[in-house]
Image (cartoon, rainbow, N blue to C red; front, side):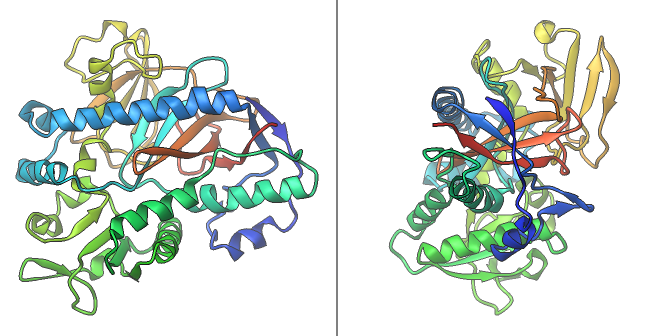
Length: 386
C-alpha cells in the first residue's frame, strides 16, 4: 500500500456532474481528490481487506441471531422495546439486506482493524461504484496507470444483481426516500434508483416527509401502498418517531431491514470483541461499566448512534484530550482502544470495504486532517498495481 501522486484531470468536475456526482466538493473544497491515488497489491486486497470483511460479516450476522432473543443485549443497544418483536420477526422471515460498509484502519503492514460498521445508511456509493471506476479507465487510457491495473470494485454490478433478487421475478415498484436538503443523500438515492431500474424495477422517489399512512399502511404521494421502500434514513431515528410506530404490521418491506438496527450501532463493536477477544481485525471495545483493563492509556468514546464522526471523544490517561461536536450520545456510548490511524504524509487514512447482500463488493479510501474521520474527509481513488 502506498500513496502515489497523480495528475488531476482539468475537467474532472464536469465529468463528475455528467454521471450525477454533483456533490464532488463540500464547503468550497474538493471532496473528490485525484491529485493522488492509493496503490495496493492484489494480496493486500484479497487477504487483508476482502477476506476479513467476509469473516466479520459472518460474525455480525451470527451476533444478530443471538441478539434478537436476548433482552439484555437489546436493552444495551438502546433498541426500543416496542420493536423487539418486529426485529425478531424480520430476522426469522429472512428479510434481505442490501449493503453496508466496514471502516478499517490499515497501512499495509499489519491486519486491517475494524473502526465501525456503517450497516444501515452509508453513502459514497456513486463515487465508489461509478466515478472511481471511470477514473481508473481514463488513467489507464492516458498512460498514467499501467495496462493491467485494476480496482477492488464490483459494487455497481453486485448492487444491480442484489436488487434483482429483491424483485424475485415479481413486478415490484420500489419506492425510495431520504430527507430533503442534502445533495449527497439525494444523489445517492438517485443512483440507487437507477440501479433498481437496471434490475427491472419500477421506481418512485419521494421525500420522507411526503410518506403518508392510511389504514395502517404506508402510502406514497399518489396514495399508493408502499410495498418496498429503500430509505436513506436511519432506523434509530425512525424507531423514536411517531412515523415509526406504524412499521410493525405495515406490510412494507424495508431496505435496509429493521434487524440492521442491531448492526448500525456502535455497541456491536463491544459485542464482537466479547465474542472473539484478540481477533486480529478487531479493536478492544467495551461498554463503560464493563472491566476494560486492556484498553490501555488511550481510548475513544463513541456514541451508540453517531454519524460522520460526530460526538467522538478522545481520552489519554483517563482525561479527555479532544473530540467532535454533534447531537448524539444520550442513548449511551462504548469505549474502544485508541489505535493509530495511518498517515501517508497528507492526513489520516481510513478504508471503507463495501458489502452487498453480505458479500465483499469493493472499497474506497478517505483521507482526513483529523484522526476522527468526518464529512469533509477527501475521497482518494485507488488501484491494484499489476
